[in-house]
Image (cartoon, rainbow, N blue to C red):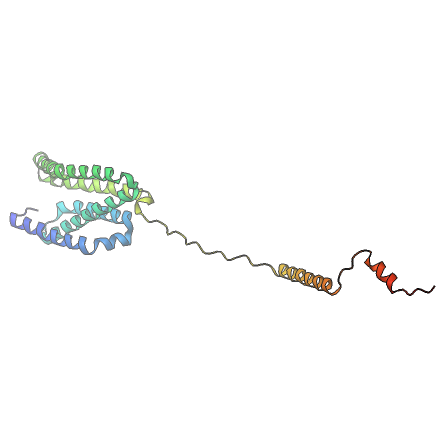
Length: 220
């Protein structure tokens, strides 16, 4: 589809506004509902579809819809993959890993548009109008590769930590009914023996014989 500079500027402006609204209002809801891996898979599928269809679109409104859909998918992919990296990498190494990722991202943003423009011009020069969709198809294939790779990511990238089980206070062990009865019987025996010892005072050895002799009358 041949676009004038005015039409191209209008498509890019509307796409930027709509995709920005999606990222601000709906992206976090989609990630929360689908999870990080699910959001990445869906976004890669949307981006691959948009790139595959764009070369055949002749309608400006439809092209605008495809462009802001692809932009929204790019924003979701960037946020989700960064979150996956932070969840999978130990906290002590996140600074180094994020630094490497930002460096590679900067190189991609700098070299990507330049390489795509050169490749697009080369395909038009080499194959004519037939090759105008080659760059779009390569981008679609890259997103399909990312989609397949995302499916096999470990569950640790989700960052869903199982809640710790609260320790329930353990009740003191209750004695069995047999133990209570045995204890009551033992206490009753101790009380009975104590009362018997109080009621019958002890007699010193030898004293009982003296008392008998003293109480016996002398018959002689």
